[in-house]
Length: 397
Image (cartoon, rainbow, N blue to C red; front, side):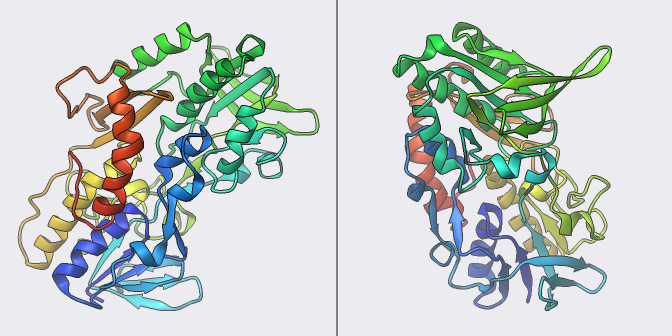
């Protein structure tokens, strides 16, 4: 194949859709094992009772370009010196150019007891296609006690999602008349509520006004479902200590990291991500390899918004490389996190992960809660996603 794309997420589909139109039928292959494609940013709304799970999914065959060869299999390794991707069944797929858009790996097993507890007895996670369908039920049936929302120390996809569901849950507790019986807390392993100060100030104020306790440097390490206990490691100036909380509702954001098959391959950097130039998205050692999205080494937020911007850079630079031209497209680290704070309120954070400075689209202060931004995210962005991003014809603001 002229181009092989690993991954059928938004990055892989955007790139393969465009390149297959330009390079012609059967010149582009996509390696993707799943038969279903999920629009995962919608899972906050699913967990918050605002959208149905079915609205977040489509058959992979319906979103994959008809011009590509879909290899419904898993990538298991890379042999970049031979221009080969090795599949899980031992097949070898050769390429002229390779695009790696394989997403992030969720490490459910890194929290003791999580796999056994998930989706039962008020333990849930919006990061699982199965348990996200239980989140709203658990929120709506909550009668009081400790409602705990966690954030790990690892890189994750959509760093705002762990607290978005908390704001929706707290609002529902008020609606159901149980807020006075609820202790809502956000236990984050990081040192602050959000990475960009402009938006963190707004979120901190919201938490204060709504009586949400924020516990920083507090990381979930174990769940003991038989006693409804969550065990945390609290890091302070004098070292670490174990803290145990009883929970009546627990939303877990699991640790995540680079996919094992990338981490253990020659194309990875020391941390396990695909080692690319942060500006051109070309591999630092293998010029015929590009990467985008959650599995790349780009030091920016791992979001669909970032992927949307990155996809245009990858397409332009890959085609330039094919033509023997200089790579002129540059990625500036743009990413976005639509921070849902209620059923009709949202803070639209847009910034560069490279500079930690805002990169806002609209001529208003985007650190303010707005209903307009809520409707943009809940109703318009899904249309842009299905009909623009995946088809390779929309590359963000």
